[in-house]
Image (tube, rainbow, N blue to C red; front, side, top):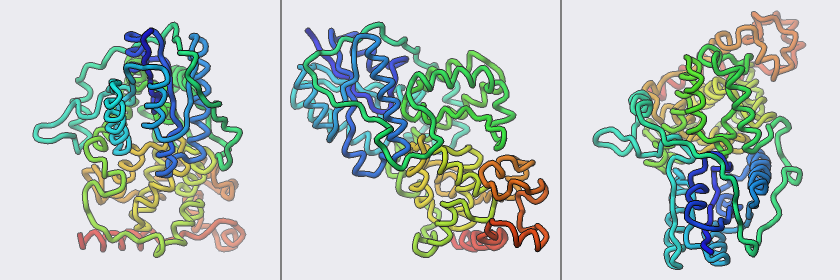
Length: 457
């Protein structure tokens, strides 16, 4: 009886799962394994919102495997130790897993390869599981990655995608391999009230609903803050509860400009992953050094606290930050606005904002989070690194009636449209009765400070 192990990481699904399919092709029995990695806890990445969503994903994955005669084996501890122990317990000849892109994931694969190799167990790492294309599969002449999105998108769009694979009909698991009880979101504290249900079933249903109702209008409406017309699929993509390859194929099957715009966003996700795979240090260091004179956490502590709490006095910024705290998610346009406000108007180090996002985002992904923050801060891949997003102008453009601002900043509920993005313009007697802060900084002053600092670059 031959046995293989499948190590699940950010690929918590049974549909279109190449490592699972490959293991079933070479072994009579397969151990589907998830390790609650103590190393992830050590680097501070297991935030409550993601742990809650992860618990849903694992429960759903276990249920899917049980319907096929199998089960999910959960272990806790250092991932290399636990994988090696499971392989020894079941006599596995091979371990299959999806390739990662972060420095942590790359080091994990190296240690697994070495430890398993010492015991005569082969490690099979599969590409195009977590991303549409494998990082490094398309590169420009003279470089190991693309640093500008548009040429990457042109190359990416012309590549032939791998075929998706169906969910297996049956999974036989050795009975002797021990596992732990599945984690439960009910046992967690500090979870945001509005986070969605996790799992492949929820992800596939969400995609199907949105493809029917929202995909065709995505190009025109994806920046509409109040309309909330984005797919909201990012948490499912982050945990691999939805296959990015399948998402591209299904979207292209619908056709139209909305599908094209959505696929472009999936390409942005791949773009950031290929940058980080080539430059893992970009998760903590500037990808492009522009300056190192950001205001520190000590220097800007009161401003940072107001930003985190959604009390900056700029309604669209505050709405985004309050949405983040309640839902563990934020509209993409709002993410750009709050990041620009912190880094360029308040002139605070992007890493401070990135850490706050990772503490709350269900879709908190190192590649997308850190590199999007760098893109906005001007230290990343943006070809216009000095652009500054004005929250008043942006609010009037993408939330013209102020519905998004009022939804998350109820202090402005009765505000007329003409004042909702500039409440400081209210008549003095009304302003005095409004329980909402004055602007943290005058936008002109913030812009002048940024231009002065930029001039010293």
